[in-house]
Image (cartoon, rainbow over all chains, first blue to last red; front, top):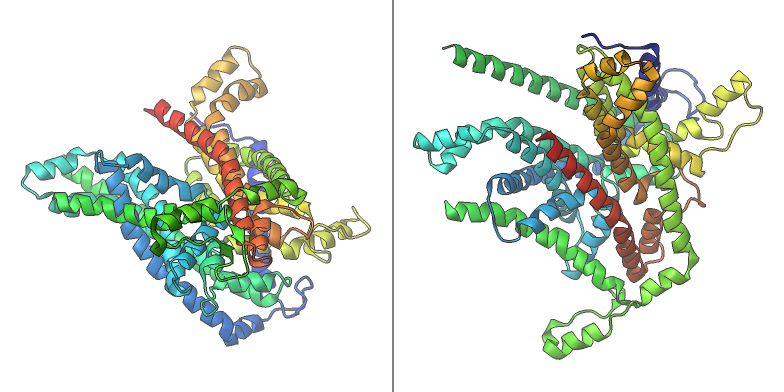
Length: 272
Length: 298
């Protein structure tokens, strides 16, 4: 059965994707603009990238952001995977409803509320704000995203595989390590990637939980953006867009290849 | 084994209790406190060393004064209402823009669909702030949109779009569009093509078949998409402060200013509590919709 792809479909796709991508394309083009005036084209130049590389404040902020993102996404992946296993495989335990509520709530919680409440907590317990508090905050909301991604993968695969491993004499831990973990690995990796980009991206929660010496890149960009469009920010945005899209595209290609390989191995095993 | 299981549950549980639930308790408590010129800038603070008497004293000082204040000053009313209005309208616009795209994707050939899917997801990964910022250069007075419209001769004077509510609508539709497209696409993709054929065999025109078969069967996706746009749009802060003007009232922005500019923590906390109460209804409806969808699939 062929699907009827009409001219209406073609037009809506063309306009839709133009709408999604044009602003970013324009941003990238104008980052190579020679003029300081961002809306007037004055010839090709890479000087704003040079300016950016000499801007200490931006480089410092980028370094802080990277540190926060690396540590918080790794912590969030560990905690989020544990939470997913507890929810899907943990059976009944005291306060399970509250637990799953706390996993889902941060996904729909406005950033301003998350940020405000965490800041008030840090002040109440007398924790000085800095890189450490941003990491705590980012780990908290991104572990929930990781847990949702991992638990949907956990719920969809056949539990009898684990049971077979247990029957064959594996300890539960061995069964987890040699059966469950390889199967959920793609979800764990994409969970980590999600946590990493969420942390890289976050402005509101970081603004609440950061101290004076720990400005992240989004905070820096935000305060620059409020003064208007600047070619330096365009250059910075271009770098970030290129980095993130290469990362995401290559990750998805790698995981697609892994799935194909897995299927081929399964088929070979069936044939034997 | 049992120790491992306990640890597996206890560790993330304790983390969320300490860094998600307890902070909310603190917000609730401060929203009932009074502003003071002190560090931290509110009274009362709980003094555990005073024992039972201290606890009683502490509770006796809590009151709903801040909430009464929110109802008296019409700034807050207008901010809540205007957030609701902006979120509702932009959800509808996003639906009108997103549905044809999702529909087109579900009609594309199998070879194309993974690529189209990737193209929808990719903007979601790139920085939110950057995507909002990218519209500043387009919508400003000398921006590309005005240059284009002047060039075509459609307008003779540049339009003021940036720093108005129109820019906020554009920003919300743009940044949340993938959230609308994906669930609608997911439900349209599952649609059985033979149902459409049956409808046409029974004498429906293609438009009627679309209206009577495709639209009702995509309902779950449409509802999910609308909630996914509406819920975050209400508490939005970045879009109104980057693209909106000084007259754009949204509750996320009010909370931010109350906290950072006015340093009134009790009022900021009260604003947060009310915002949360407003969100409870759509969140519960959303959960119920998801639940029903899951049950239908099983």
